[in-house]
Length: 286
Image 1 (cartoon, rainbow, N blue to C red):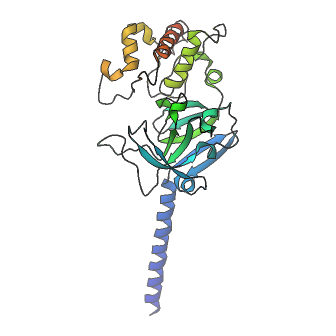
Image 2: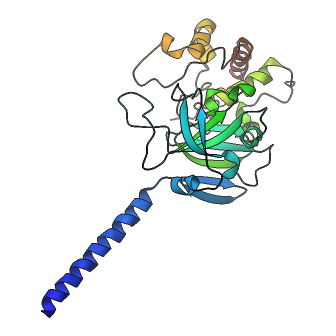
Image 3: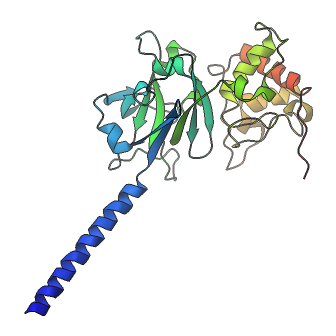
């Protein structure tokens, strides 16, 4: 009798241990968003953000990634960016290495006359649709979306998805002086504006002069500038419609249409690239 009781207790203990280990494994596997501001790091799970009192249901009429209307549970970006000043910058890094540096001001804005930034959170028990037909990957678990983007200059590169971490950082020019125009270039020079266009639209995927946060795409200045191996008209086409110039199944570069990149923006971006072709850093040996 005692042997039977002991066996039952052992089975119960073993079942309980398996349950505890399974829960621990599930918690360990739960994705977390890491946010570092002012040297302090906070980690957020999807469950914690969805339970936040500031969480709301929003509908994005023209979602950049899904190309249609999408409804999300989301929190204002200010919830995960405490203590950030409006003139600060943050680096938003995705799982695939995409890294966008964004000004804090638009992320923190709450006016009805301005774009409003939200962190959409994918519910663990209700995954979003795949980004591409036949694929499994969604935009989750964390996705920066905007309401009223038309009230400001919010471009597709400012909608990072599959976000892994957010860091408070210095401006692009301070962190990567090798990509900035010389101090002698005035603030009204097209080259200076082209640099701003590059930082917003190109730097999230490319480096230039081997400087930048992301390596999704190739460096655009070393060993050769795109202006050196591509005719200017083809360079412009490459930016406007890269898949129309050369296409393959794994191509990732998006198109930059007139709504995203005006003709003036494109002119200034090309001027910046020609300018930087004369300011190359030394190519590493080996």
